[in-house]
Length: 394
Image 1: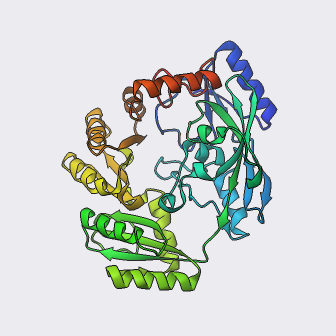
Image 2: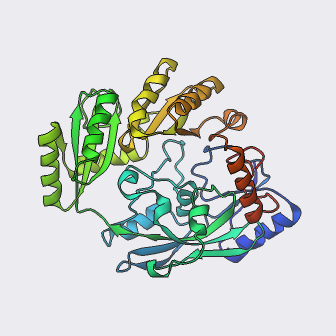
Image 3: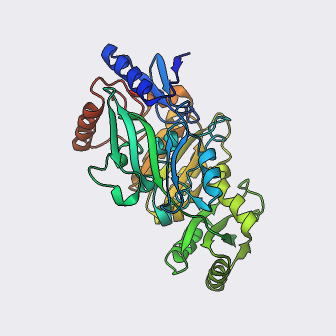
């Protein structure tokens, strides 16, 4: 078991990192460790947790921005925003069930992993909502990027670089997000009985329509989501004012057929899709996310089905969730299927020996890998921040 440090102040966080850099002692950087099984295991004797560095430091509903320390839970932030009918538009998923934990996800953890939900196809990734950041680099220096209001966001956008870096470049201490009004009403058009290929065709037609689709997914038969037909189904979400949602869903139903789910059922359905609940991954199974062009999603499912893998599609077919045996052979099959579709993959969850023994994301081309090493050296000269989390030896 590693020794865990959980300083509450940014200055103490910086001090711990400076001390570790001086002794070249690796640190496992985390928030509340709700995604401890994600990517490669970090070999470090000490953990630097930001779970005690909490609190909303700025909330301006009129400016539609919020800033919070990295250890603040997303649940607290979402509760605060709900009181003003606002939300984080990229709807970061909650993977606590997927990782088998009851630990609450922090803002810093979500941003470090750049986690985005079904609305990614309409409004972009979480990275696109980050407008400002404070962080501590691997030398223990406090760095700032962006601003706390939209009109003041200038300079080199380090925010985009640190978002999705999994704590390998710096420990984020405060993050500022831009917000949007929460939809008054939501609804879903359910197109039952479609296989993955036909389902994606329907999803593509809906996404190409003028009706402002904010979610497009395909679930296989037997997906454990209440309120859906027993067979496979394509799902199309619409969000906005109540009258607009009713009108647009009606027009889509006239064009594509299907049935309409009401607001409460829709919210439960898309929360389940967001959190990968339809995968129903067993505790010992591995889980992968594969990103491809939407038309290639069904082919990836078909290629992996003979290997006893199962999955579902989000992002109009462009995001393929896969669950299967936690073996190096299954991992090889997933990587091959993604490569054949000219896509990319991430090993989301697996036992530690598998995560330590295989690439958890595709290896970079030599030129890009050289840039990655230079960026790592610039932010973390001693190589102490989450070493090996994304790539072995880095």
